Length: 301
Length: 229
Image (cartoon, rainbow over all chains, first blue to last red; front, side, top):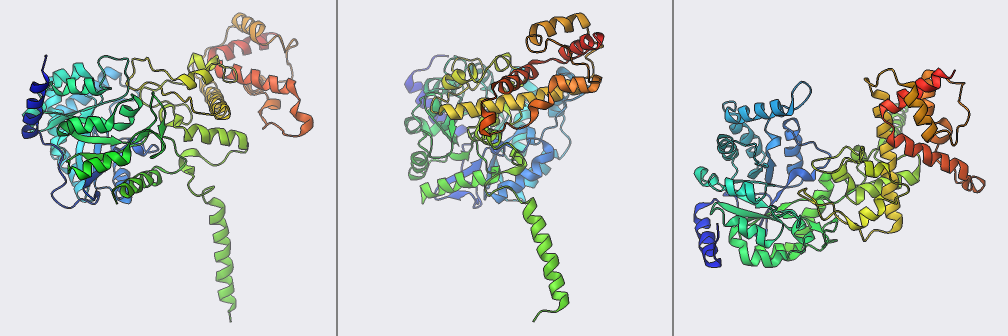
């Protein structure tokens, strides 16, 4: 598919009308701070295995950190069939069957757990890939929609995105493209050109700009947001150093975190800021998330 | 004025407070549940914390149980071939930008030589602990092949151990092969011990062997050594 810049602009505008781009929650959300909706990428709690059993602890920690929005990995609510006695193929088939035939009321109950604590699930993080059947992709969107998400996001590349483009619109949702910093892989979302190319595949695509990886790949986060904010539903907000550098605590890397937050606030863009860190810390995950969140609050004060 | 009953309550309260204090986290801002209680050897503890602080544990696991697509350092041949950071150090400084993985290994060019040494020290220590556990818990290593054990002994051991140890039973011999008692204690910092290059070399050598033993290597060695008795 080959598009001119003008075609891309039309698609971008069309996309706005057809995708459920992120909006501040209808009810006041506890982590809507001075014009920016914050949430968490719960990978942050490094010590907390991401599975169904630990979901109550996740919710407890989100409340403890004063966060009212989360990007929820599917593994927080989907069963894990892997383990002794099951080959990877058998476990994968069982998971597919579960997705196609989830227990009645299952997603409603999950949503209620979060609703009761004032937490909105903005997106579901799931790595859709070649092993997914079409019916399974549809079921994935339906499950995500049932727990209140507006879209899905994952670490897939251009080839998978090309196939995925037809699905989100059927469910009134969006699918978001999430970048890493692998500049050596032509299929990867890693720089502005690759993300823009992916966005042309569907008006129902948005970008989740991972500012950590984008910075490590020597990308210009502020320039990207200025040029493509209409198609950006969220940023993964963290810090890293340029030139494939290491992750760093907020303010110690090269990502322009303060500037990004002010850009979102001052232009009233409905872009969710999802706190995420991969840097090391001797503190607990809850303490470190609080430090990051406080840093962001000061940036918007 | 305090009654005897009040004094008793205060006394018990003091005891409980002392117990609670003894069980409290090592220091504020230290996630004892994740990092674990401070180690006896402060150099190793510092290395462990450096490994956590620079984010290595995020991908490779604190005890080298990797997450996601990260390299398994517990079984990496590259790590097994490293001597004092001669392989790991340069790799850390340049990273691995060319890769088929989603996220390339970052470069750590801004770290000091001391920090790199800390990371290397913890990786080897954690690997030695993990491999020891694996070998000791291996269930299907078989009866052992004395000929293979002899070949291993002649290649890896004979330069230091010209004579065979005969004072151990099978279990003790296995333990001595994996973790010789003379080498497991924390290094001494007494001046007259600092120049003990023989012990330092033995510690280094046995650490490297432990990182690379397979369960098969150990049962073969045992079969050979016991056949000599």
